[in-house]
Image (cartoon, rainbow, N blue to C red; front, side):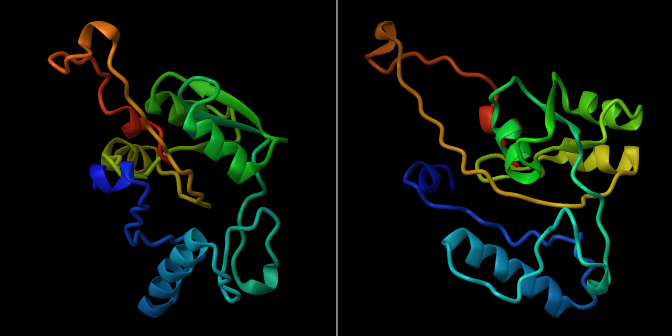
Length: 176
């Protein structure tokens, strides 16, 4: 998957979104197909997308976008990009050092929303955040995708390719 991603492929696992409260397996499948169509830029006219101001007649309600929302990472991180894509520029992005800090900020009501990665094309599921969702008893109410592009270049002393330095899977904590 890493090689495919580095060549520009989009890996889109069929992870169902439950924020639209599906009533059947067919609705789960339709939602996954609609997400793939969105990634390809094709119209999916019957798709039920996350809407910050939903129509109550659709049978489900979601909270309005947070005015202050936490994310893990430094300003400019991919998670902040996901936050702005999902909630818009009007949301104040509050950076946190660790995923647990994001959940604590939400629990302590120091922010009214959070954006965290759940799946990552290079690292797979972000299990830590699944655990936090269970422990803190929060629900997912929206989703977005951010294309993550990573590059690496050797330092001049490593031009021979015999040495390398890396951080732990940088993409593990940057997908949204």
